[in-house]
Amino acid sequence: MAKRAIHQLLAGYSNGDAISNEARTLRSWFQKWGFESEIYCEASRILPELRKTSRDVSTLLEDVNADDVVMLHLSIGSDVNDILPQLKCKTVIRYHNVTPEGYFRALDEHLAGLLAKGRVQMKALAGVADLNLAVSSYNASELTEAGYEDTRVLPLALELRRLDAKPNREVIEKYNDGKINVLFVGRCVPNKRLEDLLYAFYYLQKFQTPNCRLIHVGSFAGAEAYLAMLQSLKRELGLEHVNFVGSVPEADLCAYYQVADLFLCMSEHEGFGIPLLEAMQAELPVMAYASSAVPETMAGAGFLFEEKIFDELAAWIPRLAGEGPLRQEILAGQGRRLQAYDAQDIEGTLRELLRPLIG
Image 1: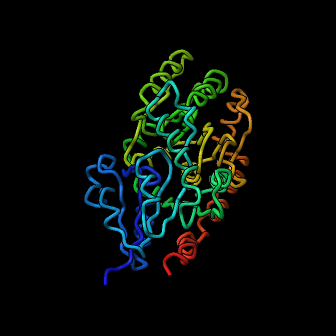
Image 2: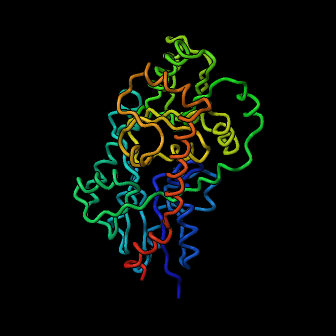
Image 3: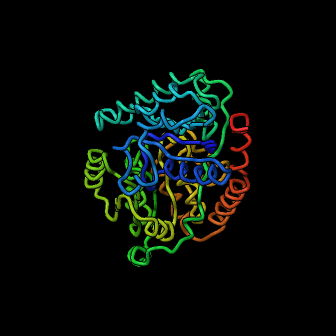
């Protein structure tokens, strides 16, 4: 008799992005529980090096048996979302949020169209799945507004301790030069509001201390037009020591967190802010704009602000970046937040939520 299965369905499968990372963690849990578990995605959306550890979604309908479970990770418009109602097994929606397309209009019309499609599909899937799981209360409220019933909140399964790995020494030597290093980690996309990072950095460099640097780590693949706009703004403001380093290997990411003095987030839309917790794990004071799911992610820790008054924010940066009681108080609060997150039994909670489906 074939083993029962819990499979996952993704719009894209790669290295480094949060959804793919979580899918791999969940697959390891499902296999440990004794189930078969595969990750399905459109072949064209799977990185070549990952094709041996995933399957083409075109085979899913014939692979799945009636007593199996399929979990759809929903975050963008995709043909894979339309497969869920066709399945004759138990189904789960894992909602990571769909970024409003308005941020991308005029900069990336193709992506804006996919996001608009994702919103339509999200609403159309209300009532389809046997279980709806949101990664945050913010995301759960969106599903409720769209007509979903009994949505449960299950935090992301994170591996924050991977940042304790050996860092790239070359990066450390390059950036550990006495400058105040202000860091932001996240994709180079408009909802992250990287231009607001530049405005705050302008006031820091021109009026607080010239001995500072802004570092952005994150992919700008597909966002070349937005990156060009940021580079133009950087020149217009006369900024020096602004580094857009792009997507980096994990050893480099560890190094950037290690050389940074402060993490600054201006993002206006987050379904959940993983880099905020990564910065806490790296013992960096976090300053973040209180938008979307950011306050929920921070849970009272760090330095939240509700208005982007750039000169005032710039004045706070040296106080938080330098040693002193304020920095220590912030770090202590962030440490408590991390302890609370680590104390959650996410695997056990997921198994209990799935119990009615898997027996």
